[in-house]
Amino acid sequence: MLPALMPTYARADLAFERGDGAWLTSTDGRRYLDFGAGIATSSLGHAHPHLIAAIAEQAARVMHVSNLYRVPQAERLAERLVAASFADSVFFCNSGAEANEGMIKMVRRAMAETGQPQRYRVICFDGAFHGRTLAMLSATGNPKYLAGFGPPVDGFDHVPFGNMNAVRNAITPETAGILVEPIQGEGGVRPAPDFFLRDLRAACDEFGLFLVLDEVQCGMGRTGKLFAHEHAGIVPDAISVAKGIAGGFPMGAILAREVLAKHLPPGSHGTTFGGNPLACAAANAVLDVLLAPGFLDQVADRGRVLKDGLVELTQSMPQVFVGVRGIGLMLGLVCAVPNTELQAACVAEGLLTVAAGENVLRLLPPLIVTPEDIAEALARLRRAALRCAPGADLAAAK
Ligand SMILES: *Cc1c(COP(=O)(O)O)cnc(C)c1O
Image (cartoon, rainbow, N blue to C red; front, side):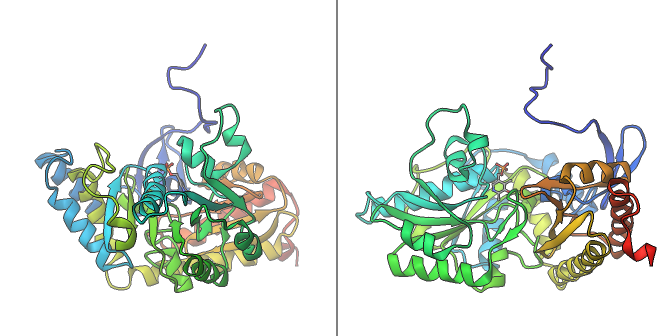
């Protein structure tokens, strides 16, 4: 019989009752170290006192009023995001797909409003993931996700990730912009080289295109900078963020420069829940933590410690691991055994991780992860790897 909860996910047979920092406790009382963070979403970990207080206080006052009225919490959040970024203006919504969808609408509309309505196509990349709405499935372009859902939405062209010649060849008089993840997440934690992002910016300037970035997974402090594109030193025209922005409360946002944002006047785009007082209170609380002096540097440091440990592990166990990639606390282990097998072994050792494309196992701990948590995760990962390939530990054998 069909379960009441629609079976759209291949769920692990695990349920959690409570959490604390980087730890989760299952309903059967086992403790797990959460290095998946709900897919890079529980940015402050579990039961963070500041986030709890902000949500509880706001919930007791008013949760939702609609965008028919001013929302002071949203105004404050937008001002803070603008002050901390390249952006001039921010639109709030409820998910990553919705943020990307709005960002592409903005790109198309800006072209139409400046007398170039024929320019509506967007160049995207192989291995991308932009969400599950009809248009974002098309932007994602993965045949596996598109199958059975009818004709893909028109207007998205795909080229190999990192290939500038292919990008330039794909630009036509109908091209409006380029959409790229600075670090592909679902695609297997594949960072775009800094020079590639800079070359994309240059090509967009040369051809009058908008460069828009999907930072849904890599943004909001995940890489040790507030936004991942800061590592390359480029200025995008807009970015989408979601996942970690409100620490687990559902929220998305588009941060845009004026050249784009001014083309969405009243009535041109909208959403009922987006930027409501409760979501904005949660996101403001997350920003309090991320923008506290030294916090993002600490994320970068913890990322280095974790990556160093992973490099050591991969070198000592070549039968299990091929290598490590990623930036900050967005790291991927390229596996020599099936990633899902290693993921299951990690669960057996009490460590939660997330599988990704190219046989990668993602490690995305909460940004508040401690050095002790990292040491414990590395120990559990080594034991998990030994479950997959008994006797594979070169370091221990020496
Ligand atoms: C998760 C993700 C999305 C989709 O976000 P939803 O909130 O699931 O709609 C889009 N882009 C990237 C890079 C993501 O990681």
